[in-house]
Amino acid sequence: MEKVIFDCDPGHDDAIAIILAASKISSLNIEAITTVAGNVEVEKNTLNALKVADIIGLEGVPVVQGAEGPLFRKREIAEEIHGETGLDGPLLPKHPSTKQTEGHAVDLIIDKVLGSDKAITLVPTGPLTNIALAMIKEPKIIPKIKEIVLMGGGTFGNWTPAAEFNIYVDAEAAKVVFESGAPVTMFGLDVTHQAIATDEIVEDLSRVDNAVADFVVELLRFFSKTYKEVFGFDGGPIHDACTVAYLMDPSIFDFKQVHVDIETKGEFTYGMTAVDHLGVTEKEPNVKFAHDLDAKKFWGLFRDALESYGM
Image (tube, rainbow, N blue to C red; front, side):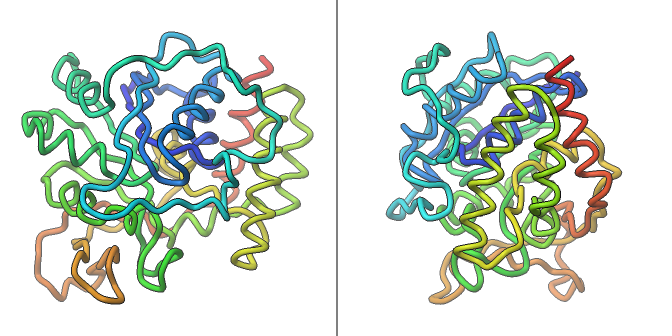
C-alpha cells in the first residue's frame, strides 16, 4: 500500500479525488487529509473534507486544518466555480459525525513524513501553502518525500491568462515546492482539461447504483453547470482526480521531463508555470509533466472505483 497525504481545498474535484483514493480498487493508504485556503476559506474546506469522510465511511484518518491564506498575498477564493460552501450541489448535513483532529496541518505533515517507516507521497490539490511551510519549518522532510503529485499550473491559465488558480493563489509557496528538489509530478490544465465530465459521461455514471456514486454524480452536475456558465465548457474538468488516477494506474497518462519555473514578479504573469518544453533554459528537469491522458482508461477507472462502493 502506498502511503499518501491529501492536502486539499474541497472543492468538487478534490472530493472526487479522495473518493477515488478510498475506493475498494485503490491500493492507496490515506495517512491524513490536510486542508488549506483555496476554493473557499480553510474552515469551509475542512468542513467539506469531514463531510466527504462521512459519506465514504473513511474511519481513522485524521482531518487537520492548515493555512488560512497564502504566504504573503491576500487570500482569493473561487466561489463562482464551487459555490458558497465550496461543495454546492448535493444536500449535505451541516454537522458531520467525523470530527476534525486538533493541531495544524503543517505539523502533521512533518510528523507523518519523518515518523513513517517508508517514504510518503504528498498529493496537493489546492494551493501549495501547507507543503511549502512544512518544507521551510523542517527541511529534513524533503528527502523522505517519495513524490509530490500535484494539480496545478499548465502552459496557459484559468484564473488569469497566464496562471492556473492553485499556483496563482500562492505562487511563492509553489516556488518553494518546485525548487525543493523533491520529485514533482505535475497535472496542469494541459492534461486536466482532457478529463471533461460531459453530459454523456455523467449520465453513464448515474447508472452506478450506490450512495457514493449518487453523491459524485450530484457533484459532477453542479461542477459541469458552473464550468459551462463561466468558461463555456461541455462539462466539468475533473482536475484533481487526475492525481489519484495516476497513482492508481500511471499508464493512463503520458509524461515529459521538463524544467518548470514559477513566476512571482510579473505584472501580467504572476503565478505562471513557465514550462520549458524545448529545453531553451538548459536547466535540469525538475518536473514530471503530464500532457496527455487516455480518456477511455480514465473514465473506466473512475466508473470501476464508484462501483466498488457497492460491493
